[in-house]
Length: 149
Image (cartoon, rainbow, N blue to C red; front, side, top):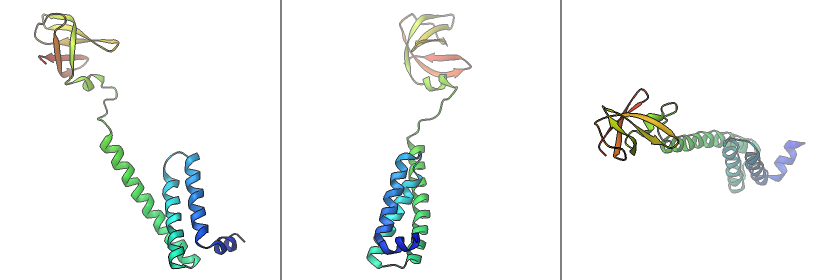
């Protein structure tokens, strides 16, 4: 019964299936159903152009689904990895390397403090007066090593 309805609609059944799968994508997290929907729409267009049997259309849909999912994962994964900044999770000091800050307290005997947002960090470096600009060059434990900007 379902097969007869699917076959009687011809190419439109694949296009409708594709639109339903893309609609499911709006309700489901991720991007998986989008690729299946696009494969179904492409199968419907090929079926309309070539007048395929339902068996051939199903095989083409299966092949296009696999290709679309693999291509989709490649596209989204390479985009995520290229745009993602280096992770400094639990290494907040590493994210500060190279940045310039103003001394909150003067550096005396090699130690002073800077303010980063709402935090105060211990810094080491050459003696400097309060308000001097310093650049963070590296992190040693929880201490920031600074130099001239």
